[in-house]
Length: 100
Image 1 (cartoon, rainbow, N blue to C red):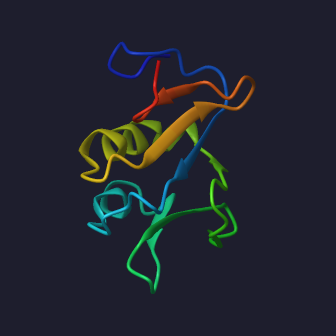
Image 2 (image 1 turned 90 degrees about the vertical axis):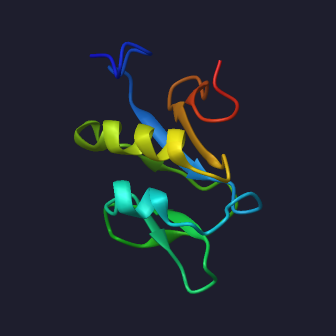
């Protein structure tokens, strides 16, 4: 399966947010509220299946395949350029500022 013809999505993917670059616009939470949420500090964080925010720097959550397009749209429209999606197996970034 490809997302807009850019990459294979068969491998498990994970996402994280660099809060140092987050502008707090909340676009990610609008696209994928199941994955992203703004916290009391005004910054976006990823959240797990348990709905708990992952607040440690660099902490990741798996990207459900059913939400992959929403997460990719979040990456593309993020004004802070702070959302990173990488393959779980080799940790290569496939969407985000450091994507190959």
